[in-house]
Amino acid sequence: MIDTRRAPVVQSPMPVFQLTDRIVFPPPDLAENNGLLAIGGDLSPSRLIAAYRHGIFPWFSEGDPILWWFTSPRLVLFPESLRVSKRLERSLRNSGTTCTINRDFEQVITACARRRTEENQETWITIEMINAYCELHERCYCHSVECWQNGRLVGGLYGVALGKVFFGESMFSTLSNASKFCLIHLVSFLKAHDYRLIDCQMTTAHLVRLGACEISGDFFQALLDRLITTLTPDNNWPHEKDDRYRTV
Image 1 (cartoon, rainbow, N blue to C red):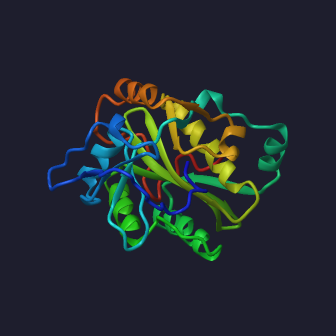
Image 2: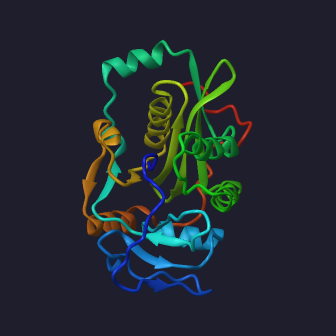
């Protein structure tokens, strides 16, 4: 999950690929060392789905052109490798929180953007990005996990699901450990539906402590080829107002 990255500052010594109206991306292994692969295009659902299918994601600052990235090495979390300490288990039991899936996607993605703004940090979650991912959510490709305490949203995460892969995008927390509670809930759901991989994109110590590990870009692409055999949305995900999977 990306929640600590700053908006990108691009200092590219070489020209990058310029996208056209055709929804075609260059091979991910042609990305520069910093991960930058292409520039331009749009954030239409079809282009975003084509990008994630190959492990490519958009990341750019307000007012900049759309930048597309494929980072290597890649931080991933295999669901069975999630590490939950006894201290975190106690915190979860005593928190008085409830987790849901897809109960309020727009509030989650907006809160992820607002958290960075309130901390005087740049955010890549612009209005354009929010609108694009909300449309993906409406099409059942993008999903959120929410953590509630006394009816108030105190944590959340969101990402894109394709095949048996969940591509984590961002998380936030206003209550200690609330985003971790969301991750635990997400992993429980993913394991129940035979998901095999969570893409965390960039390495953070926080996620490594929870069991994430780095793999090569080549291995990551091979996993995507094996685990994404269809681009049809997974109907196992609950929709808003659906009471399934409410309790952690």
